[in-house]
Length: 421
Ligand SMILES: Cc1cc2nc3c(=O)[nH]c(=O)nc-3n(C[C@H](O)[C@H](O)[C@H](O)COP(=O)(O)OP(=O)(O)OC[C@H]3O[C@@H](n4cnc5c(N)ncnc54)[C@H](O)[C@@H]3O)c2cc1C
Image (cartoon, rainbow, N blue to C red):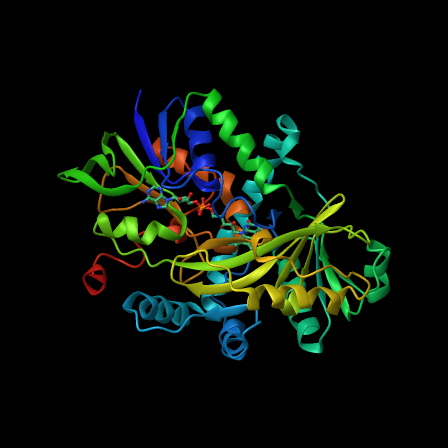
């Protein structure tokens, strides 16, 4: 039986292990954390086939500059003299073009739709992940927001996705308990949501049942190589021999790639979330679009999440940003009053952000037995099952369920590795 080591036990690593074990591989997941608290746990849990536009898109540059000036804004790049940050920003700026958006849409859409169908299959057997097909509401309260979201809805329709443009009264019909201060909204009925912590716990248990070796508190520090193959991972507690390696190390994947002499630009996009009583009850998963705040109801509780701080990889909580999320709530839902959470009740996570907003999925040409599954930014939960399936197909040299060449981990090339050293 062929042995695979997966570096990183977040949602991408676990779904990759899931599809590899279906094919009879012997899988070990190594994680430097406790496997109970990474970016895959406290996120908004939205499954969003509607999100076909990558983060690197033309509008984000001008907005980004405006947001940078506010300490409570939804997007922030921590300015510092750091070559990797400069390189990332340069690639981000170059990618933010209409052409890049147009090229990316079919790839993101197909991966996302495949994921959704795999989730429906998975949820039918494992209802504890609390998957609900309640769609997604995008609410706006400014003319600029209305213009953008309507354009986005029309684009989604052009690509065969359902999108309903709603008046304030129609939104009110979907949210009868709330007093809304909005200009309208767009409803994507094809989107869904689940409980991300329940999903991770469920997968963890199922993988153990399937015999996957899940090792926590073990850091992959380096690799042993022979020719064009990696023969073992070097950890802080010794070497582990393997036939294949899949790097699913989230925001740290760039560091792991450097040990493999690869340039994989990656930064952590820090976000926060907190859970409060859902009173008066919000019914629909929603994005408060101007503030980029995600709202996910779970019965008598609701999670609010947001901000994208491009920072060094740490999970420190900046309460100014949390205040920004909190203040947004009553601007849209005027009768929803919740207290500002205490710092210890705020969760933070680092979204693995590639500069062009596309994940890295598949083999690297540099090594015959190394693959990557990372860089899913704001959509790691959404795209995890399809990523795992495609990686399993690549490992078996089977025809892939969806085209993945746009996701090549080599797209920032060997040559630029020299710049990074
Ligand atoms: C506020 C917020 C809301 C979000 N909402 C959504 C949403 O609604 N829908 C959606 O699809 N996505 C959402 N996301 C994004 C999603 O959470 C991420 O894309 C996803 O969790 C990334 O998963 P991952 O497995 O790549 O990374 P992670 O979950 O970070 O896992 C990577 C793992 O690798 C381990 N690791 C790293 N380096 C090493 C090493 N050298 N050795 C061993 N182990 C290592 C880490 O310890 C970590 O456990 C949200 C994110 C945030 C912050």
